[in-house]
Amino acid sequence: MRQWLIDKRGNLSQEFVAAESGISRGAYSNIENGKRDPSVTVAKNIGKVLGFDWTIFFEDKCFETAHYQPAASNS
Image 1: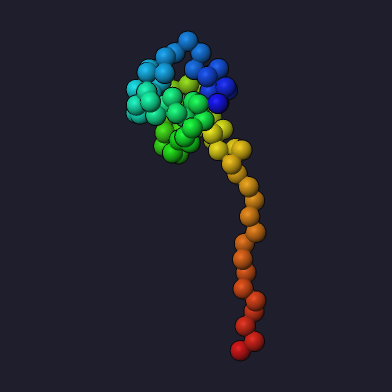
Image 2 (image 1 turned 90 degrees about the vertical axis):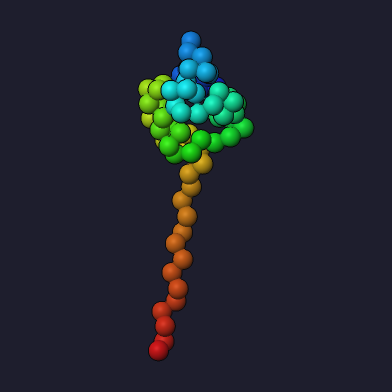
């Protein structure tokens, strides 16, 4: 569950936030309950409606990766 998102929604209904974000209430409910992750577009829309930085949806999913660099050729 994304309690922070419920807190951000405050007294607004899920139906209102969903409609303003361009998604169904069921889809919004799944995002709020942590059953689904929003697309970047939907995250931006929800952030705009509720007045927060949309990247918060993805902060705990980010990680650093090493880039593969092939060995130099001896040709």
